[in-house]
Image 1: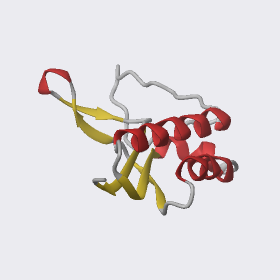
Image 2: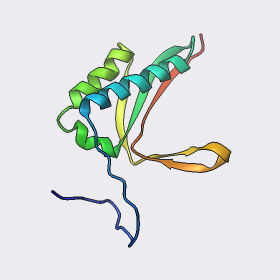
Image 3: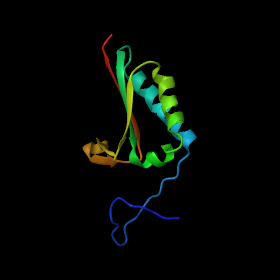
Length: 113
């Protein structure tokens, strides 16, 4: 096999490899999408955005339809976009900025009820 990196490694740097299962990925997309809908509360959803880390792209090369169907099952007829990202920065505990990669996030836009 081979290993392709986006950035050069420094001597002594630790690398973490991710293994994934396309079926598990579809399940995670369902979970985060459902959670985003629940976070909207009684609001009326109008659209959704699902952010998949670039690391998941290779899992989706041959299984994208299943992951897309998982999101569609949660969102019904709500319009949505699913895009790849190179990670996100988030405010973590103690107000430190954390770079999160290999993540899946869902954002549901809507109006208050």
